[in-house]
Length: 153
Image (cartoon, rainbow, N blue to C red):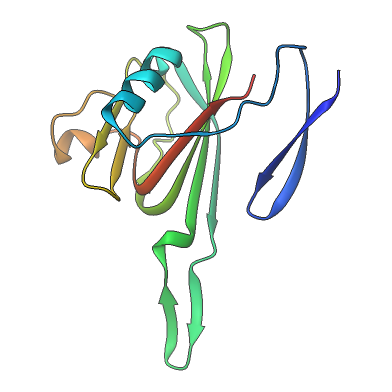
């Protein structure tokens, strides 16, 4: 079937193709409300989704004379979510420039997801419908500079 080469954190990973239709979809950035709507439609709002993988990379700790400097734009988080409501698809979401995040350790199926654009360099993702900061911090959430996604399987 062949293979796809997936690059993350300057490392290259080989992902074997399982099906001919598996073309290793490129990441799609979410920058507009239309991008959010397309993501929610194609991922079925992550309904019946289970977080099966979390990878956090922090290359933003820079040594300086008096200690360390922190560069948030060099902190990335990848979530892999198995969405059973759409043919057991594996949706991969990568957040760039992570400011704050929490992944709830209990495993339950997501019923919905919220994505909010707050300015040109601020995006919020949550694993449920949220109406404020208090709602946001009850479940899993990420606040970052950018969000991109793809369907892996």
